[in-house]
Image (cartoon, rainbow, N blue to C red; front, side, top):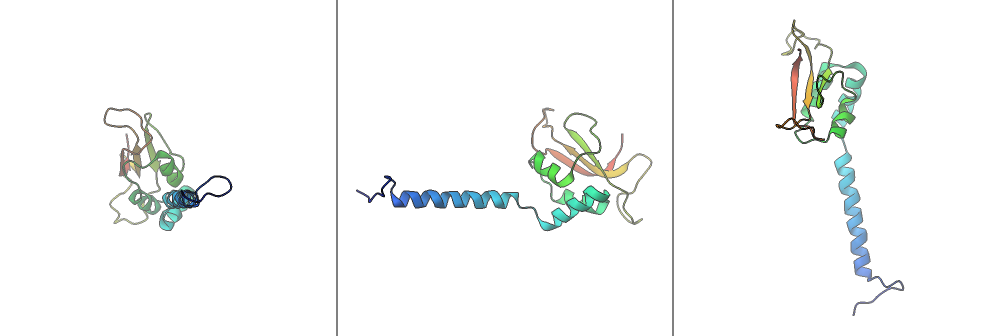
Length: 135
């Protein structure tokens, strides 16, 4: 029979439990860690609404990303035409050679959609597109 401490817990089991908790804390910390470039772009976009920062942020998004994580990066949306779809506008790019120019029918920005193909709201990013926002 294994040796037991005064409280009746096997030392090996106690150590395994502590190790498991440490691994769990490390995984949670790693999942919550944001790339420094994304953090900088997030701060810049939220204060200046610049297109260059929005491009960097869009590169850090992925389908299935939690809405809370997206909102932590982008802040509050500028507009929501329907429930589950959000527009994040940006100031036009500074150069004339940029692929996204402010045009007659739209402004540069990011369109996010949290609706699945059936139109049901989800808590995860389903589709996003960087380009012109226009109606």
